[in-house]
Image (cartoon, rainbow, N blue to C red; front, side, top):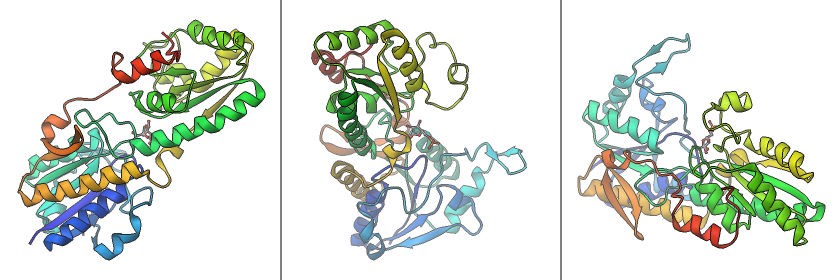
Length: 356
Ligand code: F6P
């Protein structure tokens, strides 16, 4: 018999619940117990720990449901925990104590690279068993080809372009869609190709405003009086590669580039331009079939790894199958778009302007 703890950590995305369900259903077949830990590591830090038993019956309705039934947070590092009075302290031992108080045999953590690195460090320090499942709409966890949540985010961004296409064409406008992705341009590149964008701007390729304006004018010459631009949130102002986001847009968070481009393009071409910032819509809603499939496969593979007593690994999608890789390897590489890769070549082959 084993008692598995499972938590979700970092920003939410579609497909997290399908992974939780996968773990519970597969563990149930082994006759094992699963405890859902609430609000990421905060649930283990609490005294008593905040956890709920998960059964096949209560995870039944969550396959398609967005978000995470366990709650999550992307705030805070337990090694430098911010207390309400503003002081900072190390609360790692409280989390480790929580693991042992719950009598867990293993912890499954569903998270992005940051969360997985923290959980790996906690497991080493506390000498407990850990298995990671990669999730992030940004698809930047290095070693896995796919992370839970990416496909749904791309689907939503693509649908947004499909919708913007009609309104842009009706008004002869330049419409700029700003999407998430953190430091990587995967969402913009994938959705841009799938949604027929005319210009795709990603942080991995430097652009010149002039090239974007030329692309718009070329279209106009062909009688195409509207243009769809998709831009990744981490793209900088034209001269801004060495500036912070605060210096560029008066804010330290990502975002702001859509409005900047709209103003500049409007000024330079005389075109009427508008911006749509898609924001957290990309993380919400019902998960895509592909994300449900990936999440289910990851959930099952995590339990199978436990059955083999194989710990400190991350389940990983590679070459059409799920394998396990040591967590230390998995978190070493951060995957941004390869400017020489197939999708960039595809975009170029389609005549899409990448700004360079
Ligand atoms: O990492 C996922 C992500 O959605 C990024 O694409 C985005 O930059 C960030 O999280 C947004 O974070 P928050 O939910 O704190 O606004």
